[in-house]
Length: 210
Image (cartoon, rainbow, N blue to C red; front, side, top):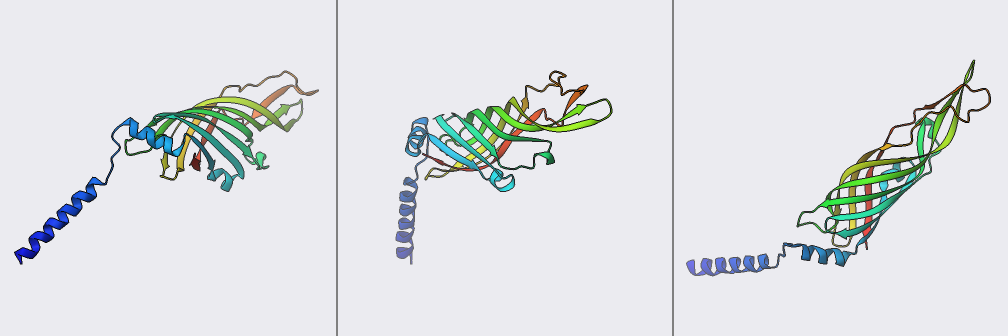
């Protein structure tokens, strides 16, 4: 019986050692850079939440600088005409961003947990309230504003370059103001009803690295 068991154990141990030797662990930045180069440094992604719940289209481009940083921009187009329901609605916006990735060695470059700095150039609509002597008139008007903000998120990527990303961020508009200039004839005051001071950025995106 011993003559059978001992060779069998020897065979199992030898097979396990050979199998372990086949596993390659990423140990340094050089190997990570090679993985980035093999997948490409450009990425296009689409936010699936905007498509499902707005309807709107949000497309992002990201350029990987190295294992720890990237830059890019988001373009948002809103096809929803129900702006009055929320009193404020971005119709179109462009959001440049810069990201810092906190990379684990087991991850690909340009993936994992990240922090983001972004700006936002927003074209929207809001409710303006004009006050007259004996009545109030509401008007929907187009507007433009600029915001700066920060966000956090996490990205996953597989060996075929397919990415999955979750991100949330918040910023503040810089051009909020109430003015009595250029009032309609007879109006004695103006109030920008429900125009927000903050803007939010985020979603769930699927993309492709190339």
